[in-house]
Image (cartoon, rainbow, N blue to C red; front, side):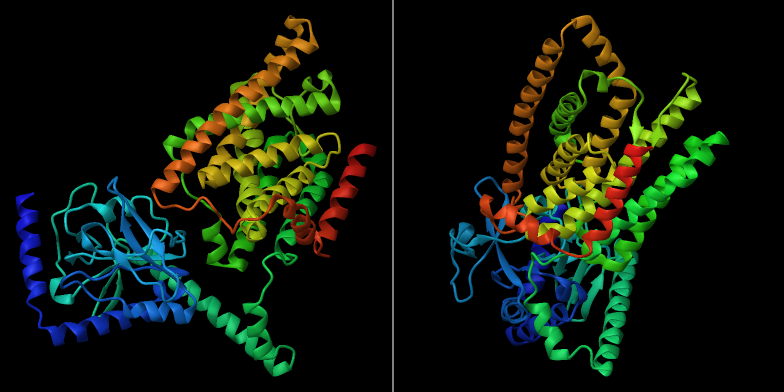
Length: 537
């Protein structure tokens, strides 16, 4: 600690010794470097700070952000030692906050924090690896621990160091900005260079495509620009229904080869390979087509340990609700029999260990890993601009149709609603994958024990009463956990709103609007043909 204190004092003295005129020139060069950098251009929100003493003055970037339509946020220190960011309206003055630092007024809205947010981090010194030494308060280290966006340190080149004393809680930044330019930190450079090259390639392809259309007279430049700027967030989608149609079509075609493969004793291999072909390949190609922005919005982030109890409650609700839906549509007898995947593949095992492992892989692991990226991550990301309720409902609708069964439609629709809600609450698509896996595992091996319980109970009414009681009890536990999760999000300055607030009565109209596209017709017709085929077969 003494070493850090002495280093901070030395660095501050060196920064204070920079002549005023020279400092202004350096500040202008740093602002220009940031404004011309790829992280700044790609950001939707930029988090700045108001300079104190000899800190770098980045306030000229405010006007640059306003001109480019970017949201600007400034830090506010909370009483609990945290850091939040608020975005003052244009022309709104800052007020004096804690430690005498100018901050936005308390009524200013919270800044948007997501993968398209750039945070400019102050510091006395940085290293090429992104290590930082600040002022000792730890505010930014605590903030960066949960920050989902891109971080960039601003520093004078003369204060850059090859190494700095750090502790486990000291978090590095992804970029450093000096008067000599913006550099990707060594720990991040390979990933960021690849993303930057991919981004430039897509921009070049879009420019060439637009130029060819203008040469052909089919796309006036002015009209195209106006269309982009006034796009309706609830407009009918084309890409998402197309992806759904491809998965339905491939799954339908798989029935033509299923019988032949089964006769050769390769049922498990067939199920595994077909799932990879039906779901994984189209999803990868779709994400490549749509670009990095959609990939970022898919929430492929790890499940946090503090969310495990919430997920466990959701799993019990899924199991009990699924059983109740099955009983409602097919009677108590529907709980008997083997687990069926997509109303096509039947899980069978004679108790052999290797067969059990094959069944778990083919009927529990792969459906979770292959279906969730399509029907939760991608579809929700595509539709959530119309409202999270719309995204959850539409994705659950497509998920229910995937199973090609009228009796099981309500069953899978309810499961889809729960899985999508869990993904949004935890901000993690892998959380939905984990629940999907355990649910399938229960259907494979746990449901027979419930059937035995029903037989021993001797009463369908008692069995259904127990299911309803369990479902309501764990739904209450889950609601309490969800409240804690969103409280922690607010403490970390993570907005609980994914889109602007929408009245509940508006949702049916929005759902109909996003479904009112000719691109959905092929998917619906494929589903209808497969349902008829299943009923006849």
